[in-house]
Length: 140
Image 1 (cartoon, rainbow, N blue to C red):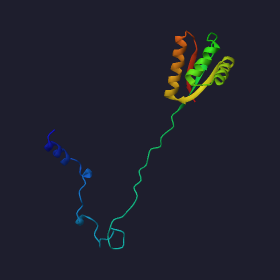
Image 2 (cartoon, rainbow, N blue to C red):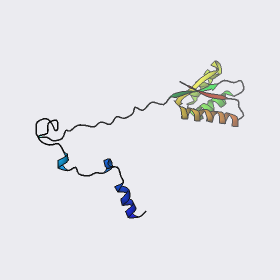
Image 3 (tube, helix red, strand yellow):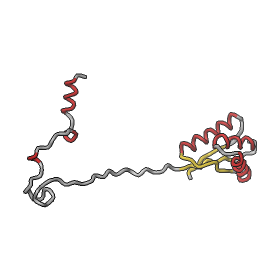
Image 4 (cartoon, rainbow, N blue to C red):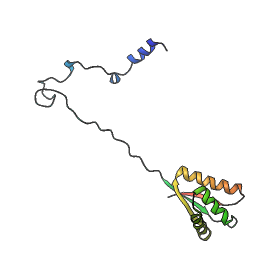
């Protein structure tokens, strides 16, 4: 682009974006009623401009659940809980026993993307090891 083209572009900018001094004749007059601060001297009013920010909404949370089956070894479930959900051995044992006795157990509560990733990791690990372990997520 040529410099003259750039200058032409700046001349075409909207008036509101140009910073040009305002002539004194265009400002409020000292003896003009309704202008200024009401003391007859004219002037400008000062104030604070506030910018409102949109409220950010907390993401929806999802429960990640393990479903019981009769074929997946308990030790495999414990290892998956430790690996995917970063549970201690004791926590993983408690969750695994809950799943075994009740048929379903909660592994954790996460935002959608994190929950989806954890479900996928569990399912992929189970498939690679030829286990029918099922993992699902549901909105809290």
